[in-house]
Structure formats: C-alpha cells, structure tokens
Image 1 (cartoon, rainbow, N blue to C red):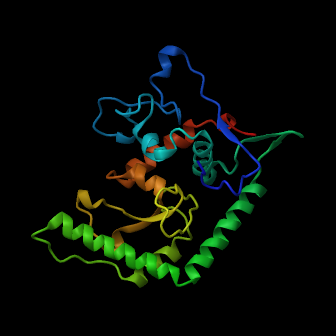
Image 2 (tube, helix red, strand yellow; image 1 turned 180 degrees about the vertical axis):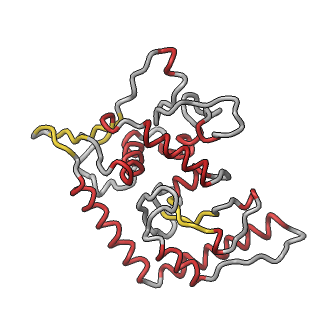
Length: 248
C-alpha cells in the first residue's frame, strides 16, 4: 500500500518499536499511543478502549483507520502529530551511523507542503472544492431535516476560501500542517472543514462554526467537542515516546 509522504521518504522504511510494559499493566494502556485506557466514565470518550479493536483507545482507532495494519503509515502519522509540540522527529538510523532527524529536515518538508498549498489556492481548483463543500452541507442539512427542512445559513464560496487562506494550512486545534487536496478522502493530512460544534450536537453551518482540520483528526473528533479532542491529543503527545519512533 502506498502511504502519505512516500515520495518524500522514498529511501526510508519506518516502523514503531512497541512499548514494553508488565503483563498486568499492558492491557490498561493503548498499544499505539501509550495513554491510559479509561473505563466507566461518561467523559473522556476518546481515551476509552475501542470495542472493535482490543488494546486500542477510541482515538487511535479513528486516527489510523485504514492504516491500522500499515506500520510505516502509522509512524509517519504519529510523527506529524508530534511535530508542533516536540519540534523533532526522533532518531534516524542509517548505514553511515546514527544521527538526529533534525528540524532542518522537517522545515524542508514543511516548505514543500506550503508551496504546494499556495499553488492550489492560487488556482481555480479551489473553487471546485468550496462549491462542493457547500453543496454537501446543503444536501446533509436537507437529508437530516426532511421533510421539515428549516432555513439554514450556509457559507459562501468566498467565505470558505477566506477561511482556508486564514488557516495558514494548519489545524485549528492541533497546529498540524496539512494539505489542500481535491478528492482522495483517505489521505490523513488532507485538510477538511470541521464544525466547531458538531451538527449532531446543535451546531450550525454558519461560517463562524467552521474551522480547518486534517482528515485524520476530523475522524478522531467525530461528534466530540474540541475540548475532548484537545484533551486526547495532549495525552497522545505526552504518551507517545519519541525515542520509540525509529527511522531506518
């Protein structure tokens, strides 16, 4: 399976060294991010144990999605989410010896992404995206409220474009840099438009209730609040061990 950023890391292979814990403690922690699994409480939903994937927290199950069986993709996703906080990517092990994956390498990657995003936003292709987003919002609203659909305030194409521009291609919650891409729904760092207050929780389609977020984190958040996503992400970033992300 081809995974995100494969072309940028085409000379490398990635894997994650599993965390070592005592047998009794192992089942209490997520096997991917290492944060403690919660049980019983009605809150901290994203830190609860996934019912379908034993040993995973709900957040990691949603985060990795189709990449659950792809160690390379999971390592890249973890590293990208750690970057805004940690400012480094761990250790690179190469044939010539061991060296640090330093900020210069990250900045080079970041520059490539930003240039690509600027090209996308400067072309007419962004109009197709914004118009498609508005059309999907209206269809979703009609479907959820049929046959008694009420008038709703939807953003204009210009308002969405301004939101995309003002976001600086970064997630409103995590600060993670993402990509503006047409189509390709599965790309974990494809930037999407998220409802700050989920529609299922009474949120509206107004531009003031919209924010930019990578696809993967949008999946993690689902119908949860921004506060719950921030809480889970803070635990994720503090629990994932950078020295456990080894690049070959």
